[in-house]
Image (cartoon, rainbow, N blue to C red):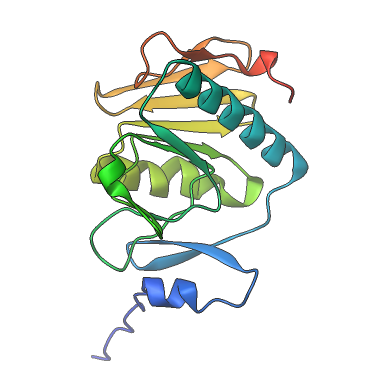
Length: 181
């Protein structure tokens, strides 16, 4: 019986060795290449980040939001590295000069046509397993936001015209229809 070919496991060293300008994420040793985001993607990311950052600052919050490209090392290994569109980190001990070591409290991914399965399945399970508290998938093609509140084992779909509550900030809601998108 012939031996089965083994799948190669990639490491963070492989991510750092990518040609200049090429971006990819690493989940459980598998590389997921990222296409450059389109204008709609960037506009949504900018508006969401601005809303979150303004809310945190105006409420003297201690959490800190970041936007891609920002390195998140989900596990204490060298086979997991992601660059969420937006992430919020409340534990400043996780922040290093390289990025975030450990799970952010809140991650928002904006779906691009080329990465739909990665956001909806691969990252969903990885984020849940590594301790992310809240995960939003913003799907502008469907005008839908799926919110996973992992702390309360809850998933809810919202339209862009709904007030979407952020569970890590009681009282804070975002309504995408009021943003400049």
